[in-house]
Image (cartoon, rainbow, N blue to C red; front, side):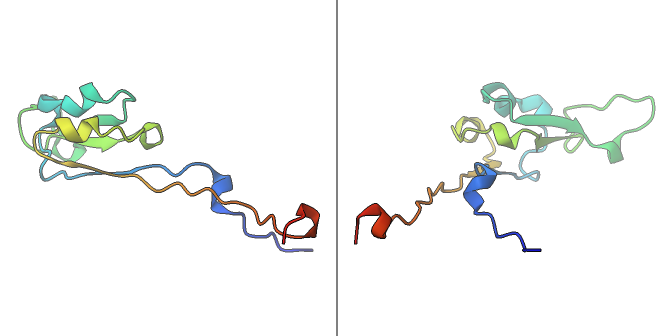
Length: 114
């Protein structure tokens, strides 16, 4: 039985951007909502912090830390940086990976090149 060879990384598909949110800066995302409204792909999502939730009480979106911003659809991010431009506290950072196209080695007698 032969061992499978290592499959090159480009076969697995495109690399997705790395989106980092500084939760110390972005404390009231439900009040701001600027990144949620401007993102054409709907990458961001706001969730409540379960540890702060009390039974039969509403959570006030104006209190720091009751809600947090998450990236739920990172695969949809196009890297337009509109969320970075509109964020008033500069809490969003996006790192877009470089896409390298691997070219096969086409030298040799069958390709008539030397």
